[in-house]
Length: 408
Image (tube, rainbow, N blue to C red; front, side, top):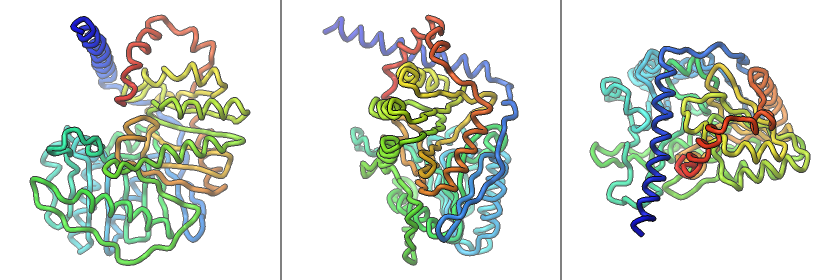
């Protein structure tokens, strides 16, 4: 037992050591380097039912419309983000929200405490007329072994006056404005109410805090109209609800023509990999677009452990160059699409609070396909021969890091 224990500790130590070492080296190499320009598409709007959906692939375009919506708010603003940097863009959003509160608008804000540990404490001081919920760094309290209480709030939501809502992968910060390739959508019509409900449910579930006073509950005033072509799926760890993974698997399993996926971090479970492989083997055009180099080098290396299986089954893999692609989107068979906050990894699909919008509409699917083609034009396709010819040290590193998959 002693030998076994020492062996296990040694293996874990080597894995963590390699992961930490790689992260430090990568951080050093990135110092002072700026991403190169990358192709983007202008905002595109399609009509769906009684509303519209506008797609954004460039942060500057998105932020301009989000700030315009905040500045035009008359009654209520619901704002939720994972990262809220205290830089120029972060200050712009803070000032716009504070100005709205000053003119009598109800302003509710949620941000994740852990994701913003490095943000200056001064930035996190908000006016008293803004209702701000800082999702705690540690949420389990005395329930140390209750896994339902360890999920982070990874969602990004903005709802203004019941009339417009935003959701997608963009956090709030200057680097995301021009240096990252991400995807967000703006929704009008009945679908906005579902987004508002998602915010209200999270607020009411987490408003009772241990140190500061509890915020009042957020009550919805009227019922919404159902929009059957737009559905929101929410992962809620506290309730042990994780529908986004099932949404993906159902869409992939039903695919008959194409499955085009873009993901910042791709560390799926084996069932997810098998679904993609099965689709490719029955003749579906399955493509996966990931960053050539993401902002998390360990995640990149762990993700590569699945490439042999996918390439062997006929899945095409593209690696986006020159900038970080942070989008979480997929489109299937020209009719089904999703945009949201959830990555294909354990933390997103079985750990964090996430939200994805599912859209059943040919025009929206066509928009995402065209965006995918633009991204693919800025990508390098990985071939089976290239992958199998990689250096021995790369194969060894992938092998050493593979046991860390369940943690990411």
